[in-house]
Length: 63
Image (cartoon, rainbow, N blue to C red; front, side, top):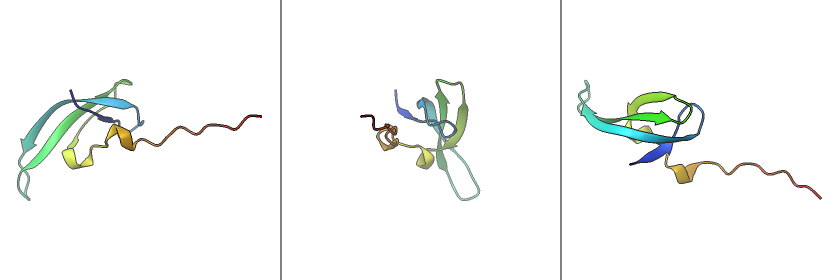
């Protein structure tokens, strides 16, 4: 299964399916994305974020 990042919260999300939808500009591949926090989106595949592109969490420096 493909994974991506949730466009809303940035959590890891599963790509449930992909399909090509018609548009006025021609066919566009879309994907349904669902994250662990139950957000879901139907968006063009070109808008999917690669999980490795997630920003590293900030760590505080302690002495």
